[in-house]
Length: 101
Image 1 (tube, rainbow, N blue to C red):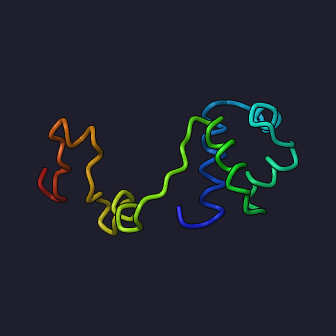
Image 2: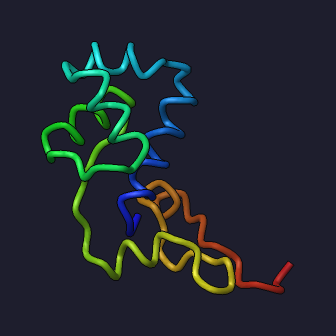
């Protein structure tokens, strides 16, 4: 995620996946409905505590990682990741190079 809109989109996606309303989310996170709607729209930069509350209610965790690691976890220009998750590493599931199939 690099923009406020990316953050809002990730929260909206998680909200839709969990099939909860903004109203239900506001109640469970202890925030006002107006605040939740503004955050989900990407119109405002949320307070860190509010972002953490929303993320937690949606089964997400906010973490800080070095930029290089974050960029490697995203698809590179060829559509390949360059970093393995812990699970992939433990299972020996190295990604196959493009064109090797």
